[in-house]
Length: 158
Image (tube, rainbow, N blue to C red; front, side, top):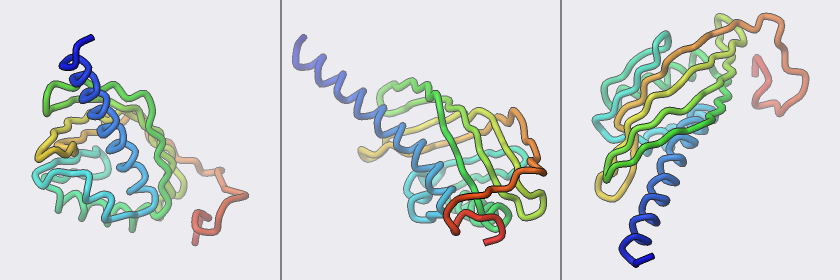
């Protein structure tokens, strides 16, 4: 294998790792209410569409929407799985499955499942989200679900 081909493979792997890190950072930022981390993963002109939860047309709007979500659902747990990512130069598209457990202040515990449809761009050497759209598969109230163990930070009502 020549050096040019090896360099291209390495760049592809580094890009994929950077994109998978963005996907994980999104889940972690929402789950621990980390405003700084959430802000870092979006380009300024990015969009977020979460049918049933809200839509945002810029990074500032995304941050406002997140803060509203944190007031409505102070306990979130996202699990992201099965990322399929296609990278072409400085652009990429992907899908990732999501299963989420939320404690909504009005509905109580709910489980949400679906598929994220993502677009990413590398600008000034950094990969970030350009758009993220959630395809809701189901939202299920978990009326009888009550955690019996866990850290105090994640107990319902804390």
